[in-house]
Length: 102
Image (cartoon, rainbow, N blue to C red):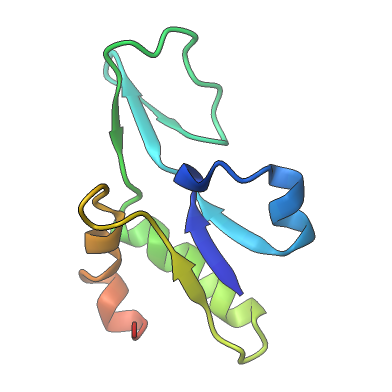
């Protein structure tokens, strides 16, 4: 089972076809939080900021993927930790305590 985030820009149909789980990144515009790939984003993206998923969001998706993997495990594919906070969030509590990462 593969888990990635919406920075992969993977076509939703392809993700579904290959059972790839996508955790949405957050786009913040005028104080509103939009989840990429789930919520409709504002037309004007100038001045927006982005944020990675929370540890709780990652834990939820990783746990569901692990349960659905029939014991095969989960491979997480995210941006480099130099480019995104997602890598750091996936290795902090509660995520790290609940799931072991290689």
